[in-house]
Image (cartoon, rainbow, N blue to C red):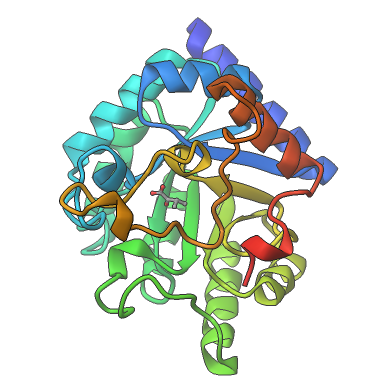
Length: 279
Ligand code: KIV
């Protein structure tokens, strides 16, 4: 076993200890080696190579133009910067929806690039694809609620699960994903009460973004945490209003390292998200 395989295994064990102990999980997006090193040293439990890189790095309107080659490249960069970190990589749009074998081939590319788990969006007919990935030993995080790759179908950046019917669909999807063996369910922009209910019912930890303090952990986009994302490249910064769930941790800290460490502490102490960041 190589040194990096050994430390990744140690990191999986550390993660299992945190999830079993009930300690809140701090996850942060990361796309390059420098921030990977810094975030890991600041105590972030999981680095997420999110397809949000389409917006924050590539300047796109949404995440739909991100390619597998982009995700493999950035996953490699993150793994190089923090070989001991636990890394989840996003499966980009069109890399998994068409069938289990195609999804497996692409997931394997991300694992080979240094990810320990892949994340994909959607419930419903994604459940069988996820079952197949898990059966082939690919750990999966299921992303439910607001799923950015479906921004068109969802009618924009909107909170999901507000009606009894839509809340039931998200709950049932979460149960189905938990039953087929996902390792995490990520809940984006859903009412805090729904996220709390899901967290109490399913067998795996939930990670929230705009989903209230009762999830098992929290994730933010690094550039949001630092208050430096000001919208799509072609738009004037004045047109951008950051979402309710974002908190600028740099404002009160003064260095990037301290801001990331403050995020980790605020998640662990259940100070973030506060009610003002939740729906
Ligand atoms: O791509 C991403 O950064 C994400 C987070 C918003 C959770 O999926």
